[in-house]
Length: 307
Image (cartoon, rainbow, N blue to C red; front, side, top):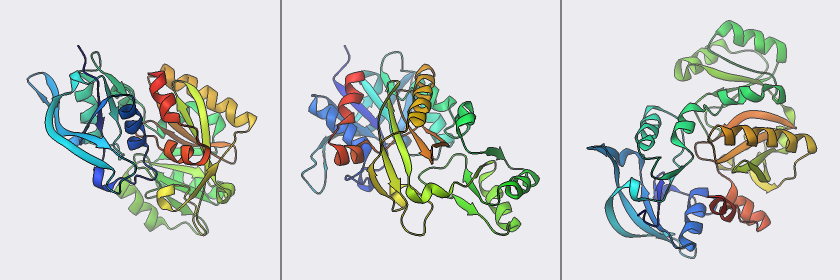
């Protein structure tokens, strides 16, 4: 019989920002429902004689304390004994990330894994947006310098993003004169990149939309700090409650239906000036703790109720 355990594959507990962290917010709600929390790091995941196991820690979360977690005991757990596993480590989506999804695939018929490891592996967060290209600003994926030059000549201002990064890292605004040396350095470091027409209204913020179990559940806006084009809160953007236009709601519902069909339970999508910005966040969607602080609506309850 399955134990009442929620296992969490996450980042270093010491580095999490308890004020905004979605992983801990979800885990705390599971704890409130009587589940034991087992926290482990991706590098500790193994398949031993056909069993998917990990060393990790049973923990207890207490938001009232500066050190928000207490380690109850260190243990090695056969993860098939957990009722749920949350894949919650941040990208980059590299070979280690892929390896963890392959290991977790071995037990997903016994344990509910969010998001489904096969789906996480198959859905590139940026490439997947091509399913919805009609709702995006003009976008190309390439490492061809000639194509980048043509795209820049057409739009004058473009955004360049690595395909497998996250959190606003390594995003470049290209305007004025095209610096070919800089572009070559970016391509050497990242390979294929995403190039997108720059949307000036990012200065007013983007909209992060939360999708749970195929339903649009709420949104926040994140306004870049002065002089920045980055709407990530980790880069200093300020959050506020957001409301979707009829068009944004329609597009969000289309995406919600598609990603549920493709095996994704929890996702975040972003709009800038009414246009999808090309990131379908399925690896480790964030923002619901901030949404709760702004609205007092607890989407962690929605998350677990749906399961």
